Structures are given as structure tokens and as C-alpha cells.
Image (cartoon, rainbow, N blue to C red; front, top):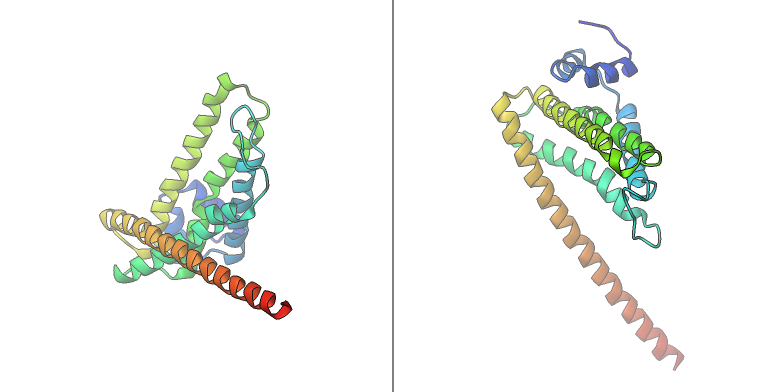
Length: 209
């Protein structure tokens, strides 16, 4: 089996969707730092899609810039996927660690992230009649990432095809549950904060009076 640098392993995993992650697993390859950089690029790509897309293809109605939605759509969503998959596959006798799930999943995101940056650039040069080229790039990038993620989960946990499908579906369900609980938690924290603030305001008013 080949002996590659960490950067070469990234290229190998992305360009060899069916055996790349298997090779990485047996070689114990994969860099958490590179994975973190990829997730950071995912975050910036999400911002670029929402704020820098050509106006003739996408119009943002946000008057002010709010970073929270972009964090949720990128870093929080990725973290939820990693935790959800680790939790589900622990029950399914998966062999993957949380680190490996994080690294492999991050590597699998590269085609999807790349198509976002490419389409953001093209959106400033193409006209609406040429949107089909951007759609083709989006479909290829997204489809490639889906295949890579499936292959990554299959390799990291050493599952069969059907068990991998079940693990992916169960992970998506777990993600929805976690995001729902997160929304409830944030809502509860907001209500507690408003309650404390109202008490403080009332006490301050009475002390001054």
C-alpha cells in the first residue's frame, strides 16, 4: 500500500471514492488539522453563497449581517453529523472513533465546498441562460460528496452496503433530534435571560424610586 503525506492522502481519498478511505483506515492516515481547515472553508463557503453570489442568480434579503445562521449551516451542522454518527454507530457496533468520523467526513466535503466557490465566481461572469453550467457543477460536486460520505462511513465502521445505508439514515434522524433539542435549549436560555433581565430592571427601578 502507498506511503503518502497527509496532503496526498486528502487527494487520494477524494479522487478514489471507493478505496481511498479504506486505504486511509489501514494506514491510519488522516489529519485532524486538515479536517479543521476544511470545515473552516465550509463555513466561509456558506457565507460566500449567502452574501457574495451574483445578484442575477441569488438575492439576499438580509439587511444586516448575522453570523449565527452561517455557523449553524456549516460548523454546527457538521458537528451534529459527527456526534450523531458516532452515537448511532456505537449502537450498531461500528469500529470508527469520533476523530476518524470527523476527519473522513471533512475530507468527503471537499467536492461540495469546491463547487460552492466555483459557482460563486461563475455567478459574476455567466448570464441566466448559462445557469445550466452552474447547475451541472453543483450536481457533480454534491453527488461526489454524497458518494464520498457513504464510502467514508462504510470504511471507518467496516460496514456492509445495507448496514451503511441504515447507519446514514439513522444518523440523519439523530441529527434532527439533536437540532430540535438544541433549538429548545436555546429558547429556554433566552426565556430565562429575559426573565432575569426583567427582574433586574424592576429592582433597579424600585431602588431608584
